[in-house]
Length: 251
Image (cartoon, rainbow, N blue to C red; front, side, top):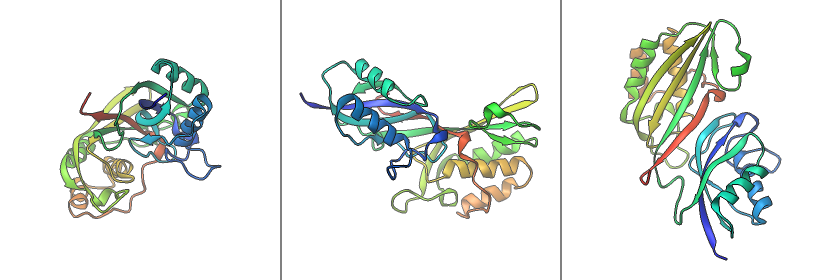
């Protein structure tokens, strides 16, 4: 029986995990949980490759992974078996065989979404899903800041690369959407790029929120990006961030 490469889309609630990448044995991570499930189902030890590393507390609806195993049954049988073995806060959404596929190197862009909850009072059901902002936000100013991020630029002000020293990235889309219900406003920032630096999305969100709260001007925002100056503004918390989709040429 030949070893086959499987490509899968993975969703998870990152609240209880120290990010995607496997760490020390006692530290819970998404990669470690998936690898453990594969061992339970196939009795084979594998290394799961991910399209990107998500931080502690960050979620995903469209993480893409790959792994190599011997498997004599259908793809759907493997999907069902792995989901049975995985904890309830992690689940494969689909799976198929694709020889030579690499989730990270074959990706052409990634889409992240960041959620804000703007309300004068706590919203307990959103505490693990959004950054709670207690004061009103200026959406026009935040939209202006988002527009300044689009294009191919050196984003050294917003993060560091996981490898090497190249901080140039191309952002294809950066936009805010807002919806209101009762005394809660929900804000979602969607950003698509050919790649991201470490903490890049959380940092750009924190800067835009500072601008939306009147604590940072659009001019200072633009100047910091252009001059590659990292502002002393705390990162947006991780629970609002989710890896929504990874795009490939064959899709």
